[in-house]
Image: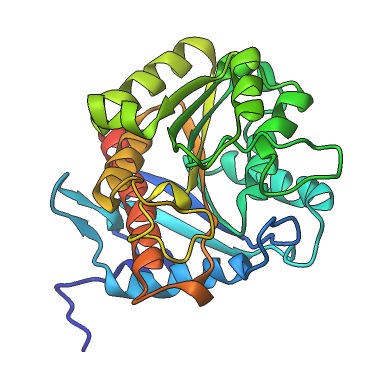
Amino acid sequence: MNDPNWPRASAWLAGEHAETILGKVAVIGAPVRLGSITPGRCDLAPEAIRKILHRFSCYDLESDANLQELEAHDFGDLNVAGVKLEDALVPISQIVRSALEKFDAAILLGGDNGVTRPGVHGVSSLLDNCGLLTFDAHFDLRDTGDGLTNGNPVRALLEDGLPGKNIVQIGLQGFANSQAYAKVARDAGISVVTINQMRAQGIEAIVSDALHYLSQQVEIIYVDFDIDVLDRVFAPACPGSRPGGLTPWELRRAAFLCGTHPKVRAIDLVEVDPTQDVADATVFATGACLLSFAAGLIHRLKK
């Protein structure tokens, strides 16, 4: 049943908005999957996320934000599902760069974590001026000698010239990473916040501090939301999720805070394989993350 007093987030994404808007957001499907270490169907995630938005309203009670005050434009899915990550760099980075000329922010729907490298290149051609904030159980610093994968986008960005001091990683888990790659992170000067450190200080303080730190270093910030940062009970559709990760509430709060920050111009939502989901739990959490970022953007634009 359609209730005119309960507008759906899916309709908002399809283009419905208020007569007077505060700003615009671009949503771009980037269903890359050929570089995935664990075979799966992350390429199906963009459509699953769009579909789940039918189950959400446009109103965020917590922040009193109405998404209809923000014009959304869905660019659909790029034709990158069967493309190697090396060849996906140009089409993804170009559409992000083009979108940010007209929109206040861009949201990339992966696909696997290989989306992050082209996404970062899309927000800034000068990597010295760009910051990367990741929410991830993993460093993503694997060797690139055998090519690009969803396990090495951060390593690839370091090799591209992104300074390690411009990177903050939140949510890293024990027994989900190696000592060798922890050393790579330390040597590069990456700021690392483990899941236990985050819990000790709280998501609000950790994210606020990370955004403040990066904003002192750079002119533009890109945020990577690898959904496997969630506890596995909340993210059964993420091959890399582990017990003890973030809760959906913490992820939503992180997304909202990122949306409020003036230097955050683009985010990605990655590593969801809908064929492995249980009761749509992972896709629900991902959709909520998208909407919370948009609510934060509304808060930013009202200032």
